[in-house]
Image 1 (cartoon, rainbow, N blue to C red):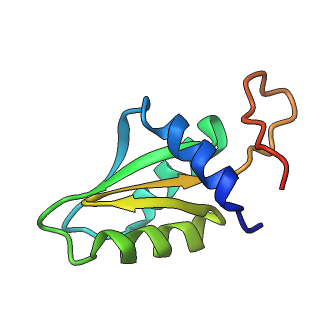
Image 2 (cartoon, rainbow, N blue to C red):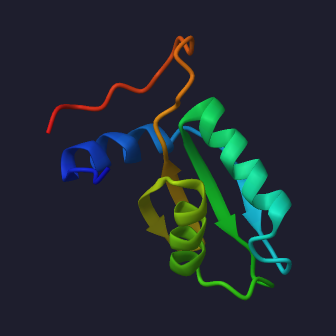
Image 3 (cartoon, rainbow, N blue to C red):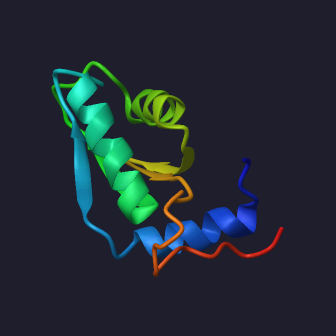
Length: 102
């Protein structure tokens, strides 16, 4: 699913108010980090991540690699932080993010 510029702008706005919950460090994109990001995406749909200085990845590389393995979309990459989005598959989730129409 490719995001339009309007949808990307909507998600960037939502990401401003959330805290960073995933930190990519010297261990890179290990199994635990991927599971943490995957679980967070299922619960929240949008997550903010940070690449620490001791990581072997650049923020863009980490965002694209993590998005690929978690089947998510990269919303934005700014400095050392990046935002990922994936629509939740949980039908009972009350506060789902409703994207603007294409």
